Amino acid sequence: MTTTANATVPAEQPAPVPHHFVITLQTGDGRMVTNDGTIPVVPGLHTRMQTYTAVREQIQQSWGLDACTVLYFSLEPNQL
Image (cartoon, rainbow, N blue to C red):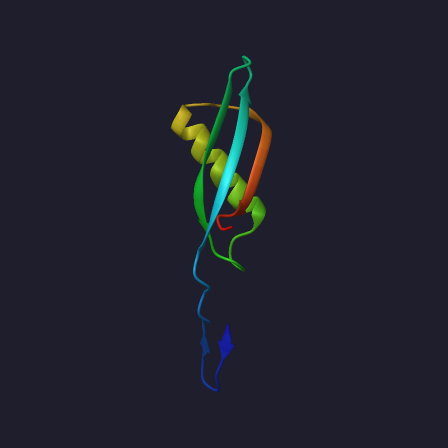
C-alpha cells in the first residue's frame, strides 16, 4: 500500500502469472486421478499453499471426489 498525506491508497497489484500444475489424487477406495492445467497466480498476493488448495479443491469438485490423498503435485510458471 502507498500512504499519502491524507489517505492510504492500495498499490497496484502485479498482473496474474499463468502457472501450470500437475496433480495426482488417490481416493480411499484406491482410484487414482491425474489432472493438469493452468491457474492464474498473482505474485505477492497468492501463496503456493493457497494455489495448491485451490487446485486440489477444484479437481476434487470436478471429479466428485470426497477425501483424497495427494500423491503428486507440481506447480511451475507456464513459460519456457
